[in-house]
Length: 271
Ligand SMILES: NC(=O)C1=CN([C@@H]2O[C@H](COP(=O)(O)OP(=O)(O)OC[C@H]3O[C@@H](n4cnc5c(N)ncnc54)[C@H](OP(=O)(O)O)[C@@H]3O)[C@@H](O)[C@H]2O)C=CC1
Ligand SMILES: O=C(O)C1=N[C@H](C(=O)O)C[C@H](O)C1
Image (cartoon, rainbow, N blue to C red):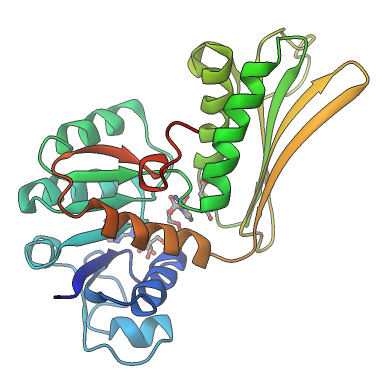
């Protein structure tokens, strides 16, 4: 059987390098393209050498469409404005576009939905098995408890992260809202400062901490009178996200156009 040809956007980034390493370590998958933006200092370098896995004879390029036309899937952990452009190109090339990027606005979301008419999009704010299981658990716990239990989502990440709350925190908040049968947009409290007044019953609160080199830590806290349930996940290494992304690329082959999540990939949709 022919190897699955996978391209990586943002190849020089923290996740880009982890993705190149994960593809190289997966039987039946090869790195077939590496993309960075025009003018980037990594252009022309070997993608394998950049990621520390040895020479792969794949040069980093800014010619995304040429690369997309020659691969089966693209793994994209970049920035929202870049990802919506890549989704349009993935739609033209009719390939699998695995999106780990976070921080989308509703306009971005609409563009991604449009691209999913022709590309196979697999999107998740967190591609690790552990967090996706935690999401399913959070929904079930929220379903079992009433609004006497206040829900707070707390996350911590490294000092370079540019969006807040994290994509994972929003996944957990959305799962909790689903469990309660409400819309997250109607109950989210995303920033407290100053004279906030007492907590509103039924709100789902978010708090984002930033510092050092923390890969990613998330807790969904259910707090009632005299007791608390804390569901937590700690990411120790970016390889957990990268492995999930490679799995999504494999899963997406032959699925046809549409918008899918890691819960679909991991078979957790009905959990
Ligand atoms: N879903 C998940 O499981 C995970 C998601 N993430 C998300 O992935 C994203 C990236 O995170 P991280 O790797 O830490 O960030 P980095 O900043 O380390 O990497 C992002 C890379 O994308 C590049 N890039 C930006 N715009 C473009 C463009 N137009 N064309 C090509 N490349 C581009 C950046 O280049 P430049 O340096 O020039 O800007 C950089 O190399 C974030 O949104 C983060 O939240 C992260 C981990 C897990
Ligand atoms: O930017 C990161 O680093 C991460 N981003 C994702 C998020 O926004 O939740 C996933 C992970 O927590 C790391």
